[in-house]
Amino acid sequence: MRRQRHPARGISLIEAVVALAVMAFGMLAYVGLQSTLRFNSDVAKQRSEAVRIAQQAIEDWRAYSVIETAAERKAYDDIPAGNLDPVVVVGENAEFTLQRTVVNAATTDNALLRGAAPRMKTLAVDVSWQDRNGQPQSVRLSTTLTGSPPELAGTLALPGNGSAQRLPQGRHPAIPVLAKDLGGGLSGYKPAGAEGATKVFVFDNATGMIVGVCNAILVDQEQLTSETVDACKNNTRGLPLSGFVRFATDPVQPTAADAQNPPSTALNLDVVLSLTSVGHPVPAYDCFVDAPASELTTRTVVPYFCAIFFRAGVIPRWSGTSRLSPRAFLEHPDEPWLRAANAADARLTRYRICRYTPAANDAQVIPNQWHPKNYSNVDASQPLSNQNFLVIRAGDGTVPFICPTDVPANPDAGDFVNSNTLTHQPPPG
Image (tube, rainbow, N blue to C red; front, side, top):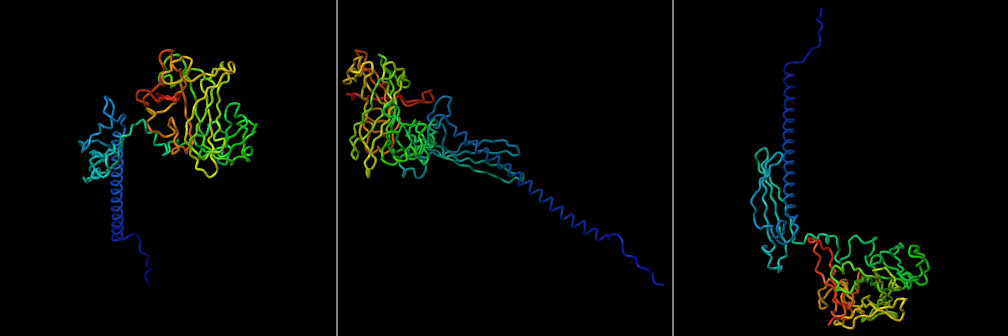
């Protein structure tokens, strides 16, 4: 009788050992991976902290508040040159060594090629440490520190032409704020005052140039539309000239504070241009002044707006002067106010006209936007705004008054405005 065979049951010892060996190798690789990941994570965390330490060191040097050395102030001139003493910084899982090196621009190899060295320092920050395996690690950050007054940091937001980077209502700053945006890159403006009640000037929003003049427009400023100016939106070329006239007419010598905040009521006046440039049609310009007609006014500011026109094919550049012309009040139609005859005129019944400008004197060459005595043809291809005037008394009857002067603004001392003026009418001397 044949014996019945039974299939093998269970796992042999050899197979078990092989399985355990395979599992052991897998666990060993997994442990190595975990160790590598932990080491890399540790180094990444240390490197991140080292970068933070370096950035903080740079910002500490960058946070100067004045240029020249001053008591209890962090100054640009106090940033020493050379290798500074190392500083130990205890981090979360490592001890870092901070080393700073400062190089003045004047000591660089090519300083002689550049001529006078700029106010500039190069700062290199090295942060080093040892990782958990005792291996050296380090990061380096470098930057340039410029000796610019901190209060002028806002100029970084200005383009080369000096206009605001973020333009008022998205258009050229010389366009009056009250001008109505008509769409299509155009704006319409009705000058203030009775004389401009029916006239509309059309501006190119990008350039600030006047591209059209419309007459017999009876709708209000806010009711202007593109259809209103459709027939006259491209019939001329012109440049605007605008500003304000303020008054400090108390019978005492006005000060810079009076020029900054003039206290007196307005006089009736007109603005007249004397152009020395060529290429203008007839009339060459048109001015609108919103001055009070009655002496009972309580107004203290007179805005004015002028448009200088150019013939077709002529480059829009102009030169000349602007002047204030006295006008009489309705109560005394035959008695306009009078300007001083000369610099020595001290009569209390006469007036002197000053212009706001940062210039120290008339001989100083300044761009047109700074309000010179005579506008230059070379620099008069841009729209001009804030060409402001101040009217003062000629004198107290004995001593002639002079146009108030001021010094450049000093924000550290709480002075944010340069209200300097120079004599405009009559000419000094």
